[in-house]
Image 1: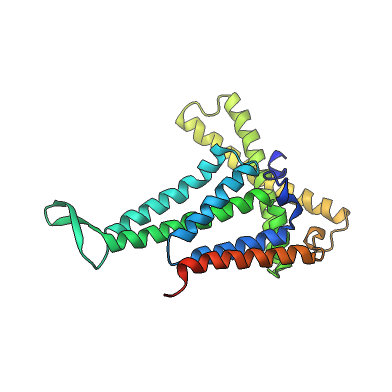
Image 2: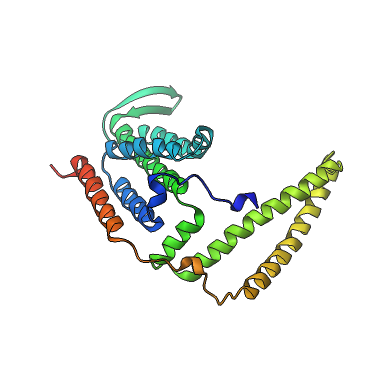
Length: 255
């Protein structure tokens, strides 16, 4: 189960910080980024979070892959907003009755939205690197997110990776037996694999239920029972929130 191993390196300072503090700090940054009325603060957050993710052990290739879709969405939003606006416009080209114009006010609004997207994604990327999925779920349970939702999410997360491993095993076996040489044979092999995965999913869920019952599962996962937070870490979170809010207010404070 290589997919269930620890996600990312959480060494150094991040390892000493409680996962609940990390989640709360990320929540503060997300709130400030989303509520920012300018593009400067979100880009500052991105400039801090992305190098921090690399320092924590994330590979450059992995980081670029995770930023690919948000960058595409930000670029599309910027282009669309640049073509819309109420102020003066510069016509770029015309094709018959169809014209595309550049609006400076729309471009500025697009820059702010793109900055918010990249800032928020950067916070999520860093949080995913310094906290494992189970730590994040435990922190959410401590924050009074419905326990049933958290536990179902944990079980679904584990089952998805088990299903992925089973699918990879079956696909490799079929491919080694020329199961995908030709469209007709490939469709037949795919249908067989889908049926086998459904059966294995039921078998895995039954085996997991039996194993948990034998280990004393009473409807509540022990990992969701968090210890008390230390006052030093709470104070550090307060200082972080104050500093971040002060940096946010420099750009967003009404003038």
